Image (cartoon, rainbow, N blue to C red; front, side, top):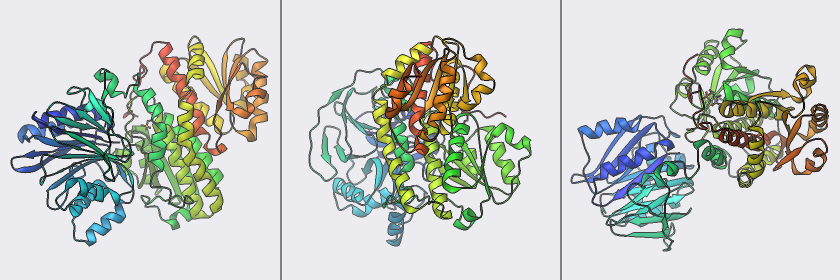
Length: 610
Ligand code: F6R
């Protein structure tokens, strides 16, 4: 997820672009850049790090002109660096492109362009676009962009300028958001409304497969095939702060709703076109190394650790390699047994967690190959690990992690399927069956997110309690541990997550009349046993809410006070759906208690102390 802004008009272009980028910094903040038409032609300035770094550069060498494009980056292809920052250009420096999204076939296109004699300077997929547009240009920038994108697969939003037609700014939307802002004698583009809100409230929202050609006095909308379209202009009346959250009250809720997109982005380009195989071209781990793995250790903290618990079950069931899971702060002090044929997987949203980084180094010191699953490509953990699988959830702003956790699950499923294929532990049909179910997850989740009312009402009910319990078996146990952490973290309600079968070994003493118990009962293989455990707490007067599949609601309602149904997927994939009602429960309970949802007390987004 990156941020794009573009301007054409009489204002100070540099200032409009920088102000717009600041509003989009939540979409990415590892580097930023702008391109402006100046009286010396198209000039580019870019800098690694926060927008402030770019501003310092521009203070020394301002770019003065009447049209420009800007970008704030969240690295996906190539580490954060000045050269990988956008805008990108071609070898003639006459074209400039900003891009949000992923060009899936960029390696093929890059080889083709190199064979034609073009030189690349960055590691990005975006640079391919600027070379393609330059190659296709025959006096008409709109046609050149259309031809260029006809070669591209994937999700992208683009802003394109050429020195040959300085009166035009071309914008494209293909599965990545883009809006057009309409002013008087000036027009704008932006990845999101906040980017332009201080200048205009009149916008067109582009749909997938559409583009716009802006001059200072006009905006033409068309499909990417060139058919003109008309669109109703929208007048936005939100304030700027709400706009930054995309209309949601909090970043956490916005990020919960971004999960279907995060699933799609994390899977994109990692499943081959036949739908029968996972491809992980980024892995350095060779097939020979994979065949020689004798043990896997998964190490992480907090929510990322909980993703690792699901990862363990995915790997063990699909690949049949023994997996240990460790909380990072404990790992190196337990004198772990690590050999060169141990694969160590560290999981971290931020990639900066000190405990996880220390565990990574400990594992490497024993000769293990360390694979990081992280959301921040240029982070310390990504840099130090031997291999990286990036979760493409985009920046997570709320302290309570939601979309990063579920994207980590998707990364674990992909990795497990890849390892299974290399080691021959699953048939191709079984892999295809799991992939098909994974591809259905985003839509299933969208349907579930459209109906939050039952969970909201239940959250208001539990917000009046000080203690509660979560129970589940197998994968449900892994998920309730995450549900319990989320609830504690932002609602400050004390909760315990218990393996449902373990309650009777002591904790049952705490179950008394009216105490809320949330039972996750989605794993059919252990459902009967879970129901027995539900009956144990029900007999002691607990007020039970069950989360299950539609087909079990009626029978479960004989033992529980209320039940909430989630869509059905394969048991192994269920955590990617079943955690979401628990995230919403925490969110609404926190809200009902009047807490600061996005910035809970005593916590930080990135924990860089051991
Ligand atoms: C929970 C939460 C923390 C983090 C933990 C690890 O919502 O945010 O438990 O999951 O501090 O952080 P990362 O994943 O950045 O290593």
